Length: 106
Image 1 (cartoon, rainbow, N blue to C red):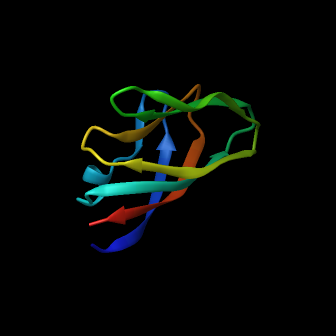
Image 2: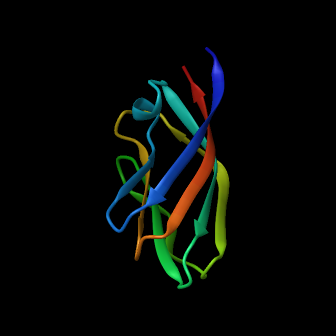
């Protein structure tokens, strides 16, 4: 089983935005989320929620304020192993970009 790094790159919207799902991203059988980095490109504070959606949704970042022109980073090690597992985000306004790295097994 090959393990390959995959880039996460998304603009966070004011509606639920899927940041990563291994079955959508590239047909992997599982993904290991290593880090996510959020950048506020605006001149106003923006609040974000990031959730791990599995059988029970779990907040990774809850009502996290990203200051104007600021950044917030999350690092950890969370496995997404089924087609319904995903990392999602929602922002109080547009202007937040997300980048990150996931290790996939194919």
